[in-house]
Length: 431
Image 1 (cartoon, rainbow, N blue to C red):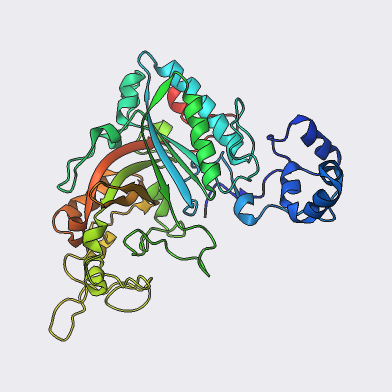
Image 2 (tube, one colour; image 1 turned 180 degrees about the vertical axis):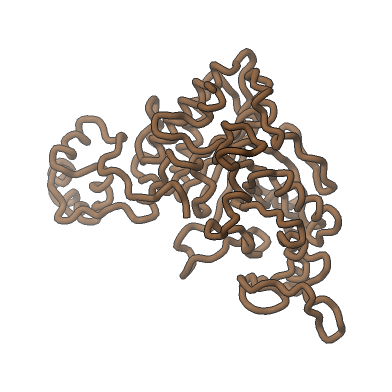
């Protein structure tokens, strides 16, 4: 499915260090395996003291659980964090270059960030001043993705290399945008299946920014943890609805042309080859209003059954929706303003985008209303034909619009993956 393969971590982590860890390595036991075998050594520690228990070779070292062992490769055709399955924890953060910082400083920053991303995604420590937050964990499917905002190009004197597709998004009727939490020169997406691994990466990226860039805004998200259901399922959002049923799949013949910039012969600049454009929206869900609706009313707003995601016209989640089907009274089974009807590619000139969101919850307001919703992140080869086309259609009569509010927005050019020995964005910054 993805160009970035997933594999088990290297045997030894760069986090191992110090005299005690060195003794363990002499015995052929990595710190990670030793910690994993705590059940086998715990009795020894209790009966004979710490020194004996630490030095003894366990009968059988217990490896990391698969949740921690899964690793995504940093180098590849596309950047990580686009094609991989949804992770349990996510952070999105935008930076602005510091006053006086330009192309040279941006190149140095992306070089640092890329090296940090590579190391952390392999389960190693950050190169300098690692915080040890994720010391005991494996890679946990960590991905770190980098993008450039519209303002980045003026700051670095690269206006001629700015893609036309990065023109600002139009205004939409559902927008109530906070400018302080929108856009930015640089954008970083972090995802992992362990919360500490994700936070460790966020902290390392922030520290790497140093004096070159400062955080403009940052948001935290989550999804269901892998293995929490008896079999793989489409994710649910905080409204309880399945979210992403109609996502385009890499097995579809036109997937690449919809999601990724072609390597040559396109209207996009050459440095964007194999890249994509990310639209990031913080969409607040008005959950108190939504939860007052009956399940039937909620299903009519969406156009799908809440229990299994199947269209109201019948079948299973993957059954093609019958837009013409009527009930005994002659009414459309899938209402004309149902969200699932309006967003269908065949209702939008074939427009499609790969949705890869996180839910968020930022506490309870003083009036008792949850500040919660969706960190909507979607990927497409052309945002004008993808997100903008669909959002304009939703603006004209989506039944869901009265239960959501778009509070922040950003559009970022995400270049293709870095080859071995390269850093992300090198073809732009050194081309």
